[in-house]
Image 1 (cartoon, helix red, strand yellow):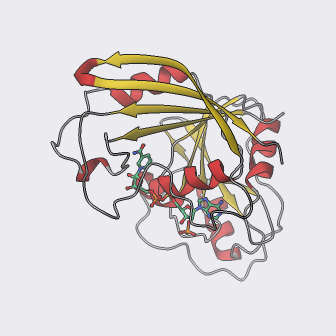
Image 2 (cartoon, rainbow, N blue to C red):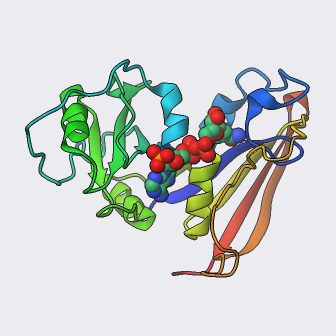
Image 3 (cartoon, helix red, strand yellow):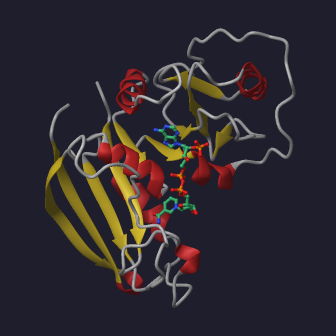
Length: 232
Ligand SMILES: NC(=O)c1ccc[n+]([C@@H]2O[C@H](COP(=O)([O-])OP(=O)(O)OC[C@H]3O[C@@H](n4cnc5c(N)ncnc54)[C@H](OP(=O)(O)O)[C@@H]3O)[C@@H](O)[C@H]2O)c1
């Protein structure tokens, strides 16, 4: 069964996503993300390649290989408990670690991902799963994560990745931390960024129902919305 997908994003009042660009600066209360995340009760989280870069420790690309790596998922045993998933079919993240705070790293790759990259992940003890020939099928990603026993999955952005999941009609809940700050500049990324035609295919979200609102320390507003999506 697919996990419930909770997209948890932090936004300025003008809907922008890049916290270091906001003013005033330093509006994030200590422990805000950790506390909110713990309360969401997810058993794994998923993020895009650019956000994941902030967690990598490797310094040079994985070495060339003559090996041909079989295109078969390389996954931890089901029920391990904690997983950190990153989407990187282009194979550019050099991890230098196999877990983040005890959560086993799983990289979402494609059959077109290079042998060099897959061999590099294996050598570091990083797991991976295939989700398409060259394009990533996000529904398949969720199906495979469900088979690992993941029931609640936290979507950690960034905006491009959240935009893709939103457009695919796969987000069940948006958890939004609205901070008392502004970006104010044209072109700064919003919390969802989907690059595509407006009319085809139709955007699948049909309703956002506000399910909770809470004022947190520092004037932070925490809003949670349940989404209705057209089933595809
Ligand atoms: N405000 C918030 O709550 C929040 C949360 C998280 C992150 N952030 C910030 O957001 C910024 C990064 O966001 P971003 O939008 O630039 O990037 P991102 O969403 O972190 O990563 C996007 C990249 O991930 C890969 N990817 C994701 N989904 C894919 C799919 N379905 N198929 C193929 N590739 C896929 C692609 O990598 P390739 O480019 O290699 O093709 C894509 O360009 C960082 O500054 C981070 O600090 C903010």
